[in-house]
Image (cartoon, rainbow, N blue to C red):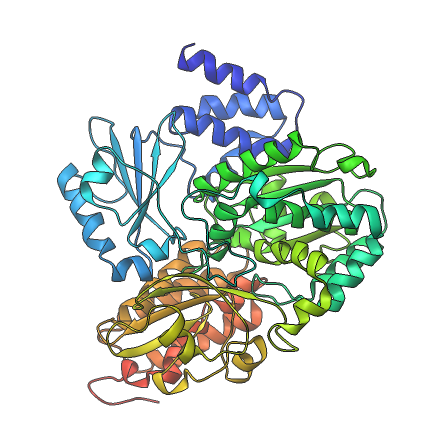
Amino acid sequence: MSDKLEIDATLTSYRGRGREALLPILWDVQGACGSISPQQVHRISHILRVPEADIFGVIGFYTLFHDEPTGRRIIRVCADPTCALAGADAVLHEVCQRLGIHEGETTPDGKYTVEHSPCLGLCDYAPAALVSERGEPDMSLTRVTIDALLGEWNGEYFTPAGAADSVMLDPSLASAPQTLSAYGDYSALRKALNEMSPEDVIAEVEASGLIGRGGAAFPTGLKWKFTRAADGDEKYVVCNADESEPGTFKDRVLMEHRPHLLLEGIALAAYAVGAKKAYIFIRGEYPKATAILADAIDDAEAQGLLGNDIMDGGFSLDIEIRRGAGAYICGEETALFEAIEGKRGFPRMKPPYPTTFGLFGLPTAANNVETLCAAPLILTRGADWFKSIGTEGSAGPKLVSVSGHVGAPGVYEIEPGMTLRHFLDHVCGGLIGELQAVLMGGAAGTFLLPDEIDVRLTFEDLRAAGSTFGSGAIMVFNTTADLRDILKRVGRFFQHESCGKCFPCQLGTQRQVEILERLDAPQSGDRERLQDVGMTMTEASICGLGHTAGIAVMSAIEKFPEMFEVNGRHHD
């Protein structure tokens, strides 16, 4: 079948569907053609009955979509903080030099397009790249070399999968995901269907003290209770797998290693709130995790563990994977809903809240990957077991992603309560070099100095210390790291990812970058300008992106005032 006939057949298969199919059809077209032409937009408009202007707006919003021709191979090199420490800039420069192009350009022969990418969630294998070969599945490359980017490449990588006493991670796993036969027959879901009402499941999760692991730390049982109590028979569960915070990759590891743990958690959430349909919204930069989850869903459905009348218990659930297309803002739950609905990922004003007015305007429980993975453990082992781990305010095992200047970067399962110092010295391989700072919580986090790392790793202790657990990211910088450069990259990230819906964030992130770019020779008043911009974004932005876009910079002003000195003197 020719490429034209194949794409014609693909487009035709979407007839009868609505706007919610827009992202999937755009991915199909771009995967086959490398870009989405005006002619294809015209056809998609007729098939889905969506105005062409809206389709062009969606294509322009998401960075992984292209409306101009690209090379047969698109190379996206991560140059965010951890990859930068590992030499990503040199890789990006050299590949462009060898091809005779600049970043963002395509070679004259149409073979290659080279781009910078925000964090790819492979900080434990920096530097990383995402490679798209026309007509082939996307592939993540780790510890990239020029030869790998331009020649034959292999996307396999190995991730540490936990200690012997881990419960969320499986220490026996390496590169292969856990099979259904090794995982089991969804015993927690079986227990719920046979022995518990939906209210019983919610009560057990609520009693466990489980709070959201995506950064907001909202009580999970309470969210499920609100969703179940909302008016209406039709409800949704949404798994937020749009993990895009620089330095964060714990959800990727869970999806790649224990997909059935996540699927069972989604099924438990759906049973609890009364949903028959669930979506996994996964970032477009996670091709390996996407493929693993798709296979796991097929395996579970074949065994009657998902789908119609699960385990003959009168409960049915359809789980659909929806692939994002490069927009950090879609980690905000209402922006994620907009993306699933086939729109630009603009966050919605709250209230109303998703538990009453969520996806497609219906009650929705949206949870992070790690949060959902905890649910089967709670149902199997009991709320008391979960609550016995950690502290009252940080119950249960917690996953953290550590990267940068440590001996063994990766994802680790910890019992909340250990100190950051103990974690760095004894859990993740020890420090490399002399510690300069730790950035807690990812790009939207705060800096801790060497004399501050005796803080306990709990939500409440970090909050009391003026820091945050955030997305579970711990980025370690020794004295060789240029923190000015780190701040510039953080600023550029938020400028690039701001959706532009509200002026405080749109203009604030731009202004923040302008000031940070002259950080090597700051001007009088720059410190105050950055503080003003940061506070304005924090207080006046619509969503969490704007609220936190200036946090790391304001933390650096407090912890490293010498960075903002003018001609050797600090100016107030």
